[in-house]
Image 1 (cartoon, rainbow, N blue to C red):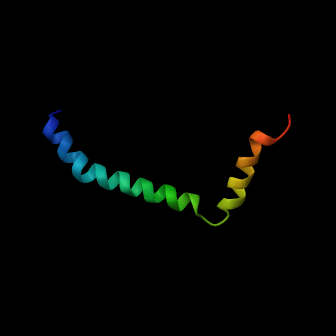
Image 2 (cartoon, rainbow, N blue to C red):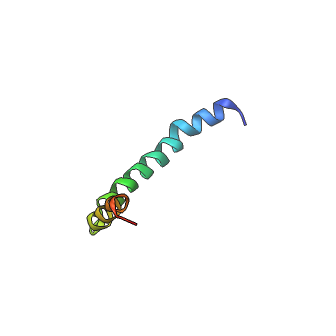
Length: 49
């Protein structure tokens, strides 16, 4: 692959894909019911065996 071709892809479609992935991660974190799952996962290291 040519460097310029990869650079052109990263500047256009790569940026769009990364932005959509970021928005998806934010949406996943703030989805309804996500707080209970996050609170449960945060308590796992503190539980006794």
